[in-house]
Image (tube, rainbow, N blue to C red):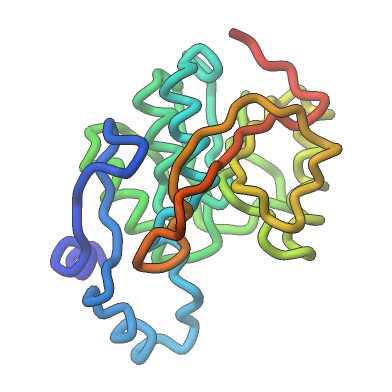
Length: 214
């Protein structure tokens, strides 16, 4: 999988977060070839950039004291952009978790491309024990109602354990805004497919009950 990404994806600076370079899929990346040979191949969210992840990565780089010296989990990491940003901003440890095995390769390669250490973790942590961390970061995870409910329950567990939760979201339908405190908004695209959508805004929130140190 590492070889496929290196040979078929583009590596370059990310829109609105040029400090980070990522491997991203284009219309000729041949993802369909993976789907043909793997019956378990799901939606390749890990191959694209999403508005919430872009905003959260931007926020972390602009506010490094939010994670400086702290242990960080990038939940639903996809490409790993948020985890890479946390590592660049000085987190003492970064774990990037996702349920897609292909994302593990993307996370590892993107960490290497940015010369930072991000540890991939395969699995659904929304109902499992979390690794020992101080901060949970989540970019763009409120696009489905059932998933949103699971994520919110997970964040409640985090809050009870004293874990700070920061979320990036472009305004998806199932984001429970009453449970969050607004922190910042950034102009930028929402990459949901090969081409970015119309310029819009993507926001960053803190889950209510989190204790954020600056």
